[in-house]
Length: 246
Image (cartoon, rainbow, N blue to C red; front, side):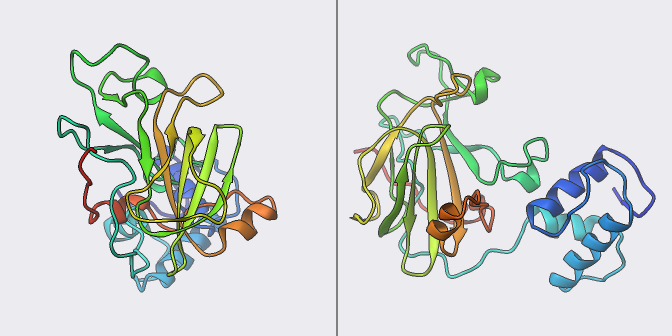
């Protein structure tokens, strides 16, 4: 697929949403490849050392869909959910906004386990739309690395917590039914953070929404800004080990 100025399609809208998620596009998300989209593409290409021609071909698309990590990742680290007692590992079931353009405000990933016949019946999947994913009752998320809790509060989608590593990386967890940490608490890798629960809206079943952020998360929240993750957390998760069930 190649997109250029003058094109109009849903693919162009997906492009605009991806550029908007990176803070490069300020126009309407209308699917029309106009001057603002062209400028944003050129700015993005220049920032990644690509040929600056304003044309979105395979190389530019690949750079958009796989934004660069900002190493060093915290070491040691792990997934924010443990394996189940039967060995099942958590999976990413819904991706970052640049790869999930239908949800432009979805800046992290949703984590669930593969569902198996015989699991206790309950509402499962992403908003109940798929029978493929599931999470047991009384599942706790864990600290993916050592750090200090810098934010622990309620929100419209359940309780949330942000953990800060000395390197400046922050890990955010959302949709908790109950937190077991408070602001200022030092936690070690693998320590429990909170009980994963249903969203108070009632339309989302149990799952953990996980984000990464580089910078001062507390200052952003204090000023009313929604903390957009600065990098796709799946990039870190892809190289992070799983901890076994306890």
